[in-house]
Image (cartoon, rainbow over all chains, first blue to last red; front, side, top):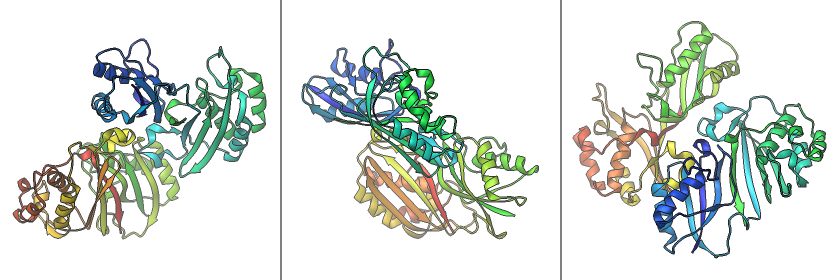
Length: 242
Length: 242
């Protein structure tokens, strides 16, 4: 039976979503260990987004094939044995054909910049402090060049074997109290892409790049042309849509 | 010149508000060290509520007498040198006669119980997990006996030299998603009082005490009659009113 998991995690302590050689310090590994114990055999789960080390998730989605049992029983078992920085919000029976990554139509990532970190004592681990004054208008202009279907190779740390063309449906920049929040919505994201987009928008915000530099950066298809990779701690996978 | 500080802190790492012999691991101590450096002389600040070790604050208030300078300059200096788990929200010039504790008319404390901790991955350090089913109706009945002016000696860990009579204006119990939130509003609180009130309500919630036991507990004026002291991590000083 195929089950869909809705998962939250504080990524601070983890080497990201994807299981590495050891199953120790990844979210996928942690969940697989518990499910393998429940099933009495090795279990593999499929996550929708491979979040980097230190990145958080409010709404990661995964699917896993398990012996049939009540969904609530699976949820309770997972939450009993998982560490407290990983929470299984929901477990649901789904069609055998459902695949969390292949069927995802859109993902929403949020990057939170603390422009006045003293106002965010309780959320400081989920934001990146940024006390330099930022020109939000210029950042919005730059974002407008990035929205749409482009080859985002300049915004990817790995050389892609397959296509690096993705479609960014929306980049929303919001000025909140002591915070600038950037929401990215698109059909897929390359390795480190959201963090490099954010780093590039930050360089526009402080005037190191101008919005008009963006088309040439896209055109170049070279990682070095774009801005620095923004820190992982401010990034959160908010939602996966199907 | 007298300044009023509005302060937030994550109390996890601290031995509470009040400076002890060393100035090291208390909120008051941390703030005084920074202000003393700013002033070039030892500075003492006066806090409205002496929160216990591990208790958090969203709206602690303190006042302090300093050489006159722009309030924003004091705020920036404090936030630059304070650790990131203490945030100064606001600094404001106030009348010389203002005293944060003596002038406070009301304090609001919030106690957060995580009845489904997996839903609170990002707020887990500010809630107390409680997975036993709780009878919220019984807890509300018990709360009704506690509201009003009473001698709360049974709800205080220290033997009070002065009066232990306080007036509790309100105890609000709310069922939220995976959470029971208890809000206490009153003109003053004794040492450990909110945590003992919460521990007592919890014992009513699990059926160990009944609401009708509360009048006798108040009457006894003995700490042992009331429930256990609930953990500090779920408690937060939300607001001080004047």
